[in-house]
Image 1 (spheres, protein in one colour):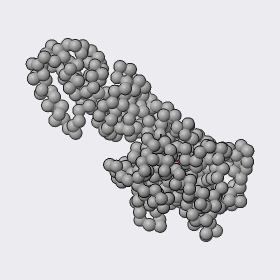
Image 2 (cartoon, rainbow, N blue to C red; image 1 turned 180 degrees about the vertical axis):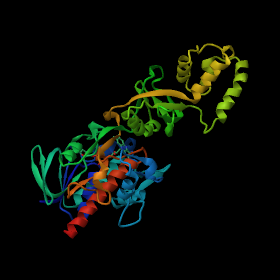
Image 3 (spheres, protein in one colour; image 1 turned 90 degrees about the vertical axis):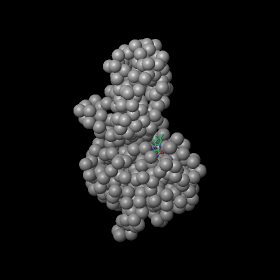
Length: 420
Ligand SMILES: Cc1cc2nc3c(=O)[nH]c(=O)nc-3n(C[C@H](O)[C@H](O)[C@H](O)COP(=O)(O)OP(=O)(O)OC[C@H]3O[C@@H](n4cnc5c(N)ncnc54)[C@H](O)[C@@H]3O)c2cc1C
């Protein structure tokens, strides 16, 4: 009989197994993939963005629970030391022999290879009393503390405690599945409906003519009252489906929530790099000079944006790109400048789960003790990582959450074991 059985060998499950193994617990780790840490290899474009030096839970995480700031702060704090989440991640990596480096606040392994993180974790797993079962999907869990039965397709196991580290539904090809939600539900937990997050956004407008264009942009996510819900900036990637890129990923969680509430949000995109209206007014003023000179409308717009985007702006304003700027009236010119400064795209949906990096929604965090990650409904059951109704923005927040909640579950089980 095992002290604990961890279901899922991703970031949370591996961190939990290493922690439990170090503390001398008899541990079973089960994963349905043929490879442990399969998703980890693909993180951070193969570089694995482990954490972030600019941590602020209020800004970087989303959940449908109102008290989620308390939950995250508590789940990511370390009762043994006062270390911040990023320090804890760097320290844990260092204990595995992984040095880290920082790039604009983003923390990566110094090797710049996600594989180095997975291999170090797997080497650690081999050093302890951890039985690893791969290629086996856990189908159900029955019983209760101190004897749960874990049923897989071909085998069954017994353990005193269970850690669910099944991850979310995103990116099925890398292990994403809904099985964790089903198991949690079968054990009595409520589960918030899931939707893709950190993904591209589909829009009503036809963007075929500009597909493939990349442009630096400042973007506002507006609700149907034109209230700014969130802002972001960076490289916007236009596709046939809609818009993508990290700046869009960051807006996707809130956009998904608005859609779920029946609101059709809008992306308000500025291709002019200015925090205020100064540049806008400058462009408007310069129109008089431009209209004196011999430029086509598309040429004028191409002074600010990619030529395909310039043509798109002409089309959406019903102005021929070939017409001379001097031929346009003031209203037409103002509309063109307005499009550079505030191009509106109407959100219809998000890209699908297979193209999302993270799942929003999941096991209701009100039913979990964030100090231990133990279920408040089922003693002896621990729930960690992306399976919970918490999703972070880009920048290492999701791995930080998965790794630290995995470690926390391992430590809490050891504390409970000692006090039993
Ligand atoms: C392409 C991509 C890039 C990303 N880059 C970053 C990044 O750079 N930084 C960052 O912070 N986040 C990143 N993320 C998000 C991050 O990888 C995840 O949030 C994190 O891996 C979640 O960890 P987890 O352990 O909870 O789940 P997972 O890593 O998904 O692991 C869950 C594991 O459970 C297994 N499993 C599920 N159900 C069962 C079952 N019933 N029986 C047995 N096994 C089961 C799965 O096979 C899987 O191995 C990225 C995600 C993707 C898809």
